[in-house]
Length: 176
Ligand code: SF4
Ligand code: SF4
Image 1 (tube, rainbow, N blue to C red):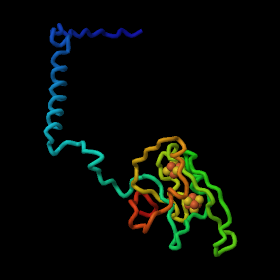
Image 2 (image 1 turned 180 degrees about the horizontal axis):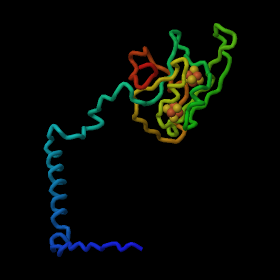
Image 3 (image 1 turned 135 degrees about the vertical axis):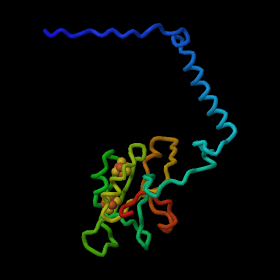
Image 4 (image 1 turned 180 degrees about the vertical axis):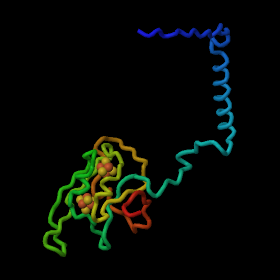
């Protein structure tokens, strides 16, 4: 076996002040105190804001709560193709399809039921990407509070586009 030389490192005695960590503790407290005073007296470079009175303007690609878009006559663009439900990794979309009596083609379907469980949703946007009709897009609405578990399961009434598309707080959507 090869003889491996041993190297002894003499670290020298550790001073008492280092052993009790007094210097780093004082330094840490000074940093905390500096930030506290800076926040207290409202310097302009403070990162926090007075939420909810003050809100940040988020990107137009923010993936917030979904919108089911509508046609000019107010009906949903969704043709119940199940692409979004299939693509959803959280398995939180439930669709029940039915024949569309207003359809211009014989086989067109519409959603009799369209639900998203917002507490299971991970806001990945895969449903939006999968939709061939741009029937589901995302808004920038990300403040969601629910008083009961079942309130988090939202249906067509809650998801339906309300008013002209340009008045929606639009977030992530295809081709944008
Ligand atoms: S955003 Fe993602 S997790 Fe949420 S419903 Fe769409 S595909 Fe499912
Ligand atoms: S992918 Fe689009 S058209 Fe198909 S079911 Fe989902 S929302 Fe409706």
